[in-house]
Amino acid sequence: MLEKTFCSSPWFHIRIDTAGNYLPCRWAAWSEINTPKVNTVSNTSLLGYMNSDVMSETRIKMLNAVPMKLCDYCYNDEENNKVSGRQKQLLKSAITLEKFQNTLCASPHYENFKYSDINQGWTNTTPVDLQIEIGNTCNGACIMCAPKHSSRLVKDYQKLNQLDQTLFPIYQVGKNWTDDERLVEKFVNEIGQLDNIKYLHFLGGETLYIKSFYDICNQLIKTGQSKTINLGTTTNCTVANADLENIIRNFKHVHLGLSIESFHGINDYVRYPGDINDITDNIHAFLKLREETDLHLTLRITPSILTIYHIDTVFEFMLENKITAESCNFLQDPKCLRIEYLPSNLIDTIKSKIDAIIDKYDLKESNQTILNIRRDDLIDQVIGQMIFEYKHLLENLVTPDDAELQRKDLVKFLKSFESIRNNSILTYLPEYEKFLRSYGY
Image (cartoon, rainbow, N blue to C red; front, side, top):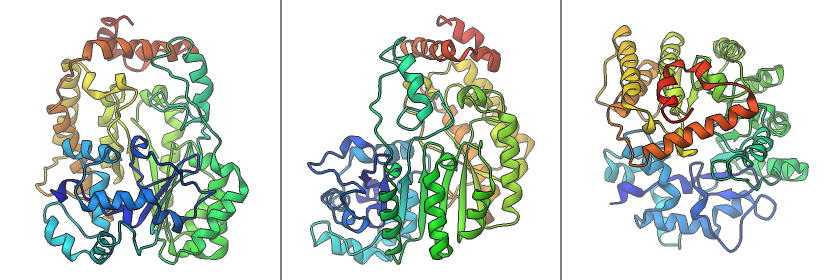
């Protein structure tokens, strides 16, 4: 059953987390990365990590159809009929699940797979695609985030932990590897040695708020390597400046993911302390820049039990502005924010709102799943595909057995945040009042 588990990502991709640890995949969960020696940017080169024990063992498991905890996010997406990261990575190797065996054998990477199969998982390939997490420095404190991804949440969690130690555990947050300018310089020099590097994807914190993002990009512009590199990053849309515009104009291609949950005030509550009016203005500025440069924009959404109610505003914006969206991994933590804990009457209302969008724009569902969702010539189809994905997701939701417990935790969770922010969910979602009151709000 190779087609159920195989992914080509370990043959061309590397991820670096905020502490500078190497990981095999941008979607990987830490839980399965337990090795005697941790590979970091300080003790291992990019090329060295490609043939590290972790990467070699990962390739061996891939080639032998061994399911890995490492891949749970992708397995979960596929079980819910969403396009997974695995499918996107396979596409880079010209492999599709529908014609897996034939496309695997015809893949331009097939000989590389064979090489690894007979050489204990080692590879003769070099990194092509890097995800670089440059730190947790952030000007936002999203309620579904965690201190390891947001410096602003660190102090919040110290206060919230005193209210509920279970819902708000104390995280050990280390230093960002990019705080060491010598490591940043070492990293840029190593990129300069990679002839085949095609894609750099940066993540924060808030990437556009972090100095090292500009340092790395500007150094690649200075050496001229930026002209052959596709650059990607994600932003909370609170930052738009001339330095970013210069980067966009000097890289071969730039993809900017715009993190937003709703074009409604609920976005301000969830992505605290953002202002939806300022955020919308910045998004429109990016849309204008898209007309002048090789800039690709997508909305990046992570719907939760709170923001799903106004997801129709996202769909409407997509359709009106010809911009696609990519749904991040289904929100898993905090558990009480998962969509499936929403009562059926509210789910029915959301489904009606989505149906109204479908009727208004006369959308038709396609029988063909589009994997390369960033193709500019398929914008309309990709938008329609996402809207129908969420329609079917809501139609097939099953209320978990622990719903009563999680709904009570949801109220505790929200009231705890509100106690330090002096706001109320009911200001933004009055439609939820009966639901939340019934669980102690």
